Amino acid sequence: MKVLLLKDAKEDDGGQDPYIRELGFCGLEATLIPVLSFEFLALPSLSEKLSQPERYGGLVLTSPRAVEAAELCLRRDGGTEVWTESLRERWSAKPVYVVGSATASLANKMGLDAEGEHCGTAEKLAGHICSRESPALPLLFPCGALKGETLPKMLKDKGIPLESLTVYQKAPHPGIQVNLSSYYSEQGVPAGITFFSPSGLAYSLKHIQDLSGSSIHQIKFAAIGPTTARALAAQGLPVSCTAESPTPRALAEGLRRALQPPHC
Image 1 (cartoon, helix red, strand yellow):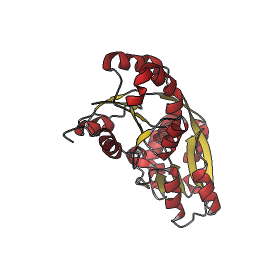
Image 2 (cartoon, one colour):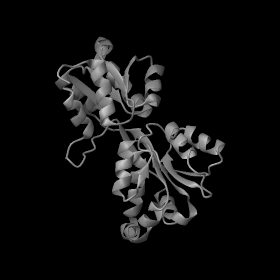
Image 3 (tube, helix red, strand yellow):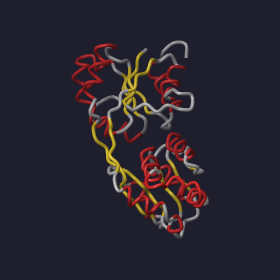
Image 4 (cartoon, one colour):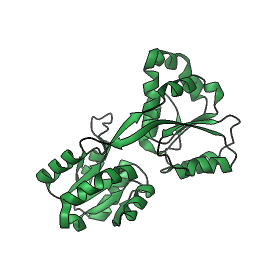
């Protein structure tokens, strides 16, 4: 049974995207099509802030892109050596809060001991942060241009200082229409389509509707989390599956129940 995942590929240590592997275990033939591209912003400002860990009580990283922005800063002007020699250890002495396993994995590869991986949403992460002792110094929060306000508001209400810096913005992937058209012409209408963000939904839905035609009612639509599920519902689309957490295994289990393929 064929399913479409609207995300870019991220190979793990085994050389395979973990979503492809987990869905394969359930007899689902998954194809990845990226629908977002990213432009990184304010990297000099982020570099300056990362070079001064003594000013902050910790880091908040709610997306893989935020970690990638930090990595880009480290590759600028010989920053990798400085990070390895001193900054990594100084940041590791502070809490580093993350959402989801993908963000945690990237943070760990930087040498940071991340916590909050089990938090599938920014709201849950905010609750986790609020359960800890309030830091005297602000938490550094490199984020996207379309970040939600739930986490900043929850921390503010608890008196936890937060310093946000917009370090990336989303744009439509230039190959959306061509890649989707190729998929439909070669594979036909998929049994299921998973969206990974409201932005990805906004950029791809019209193409999917045009390509699917009357067959769109046969498709099971899935969301990686509640925010994306709400965006699907707002478009009038039935949500057959919302992953319990933003992980390959949780999505595979949700799609398995929605599609009920054999031998899983």
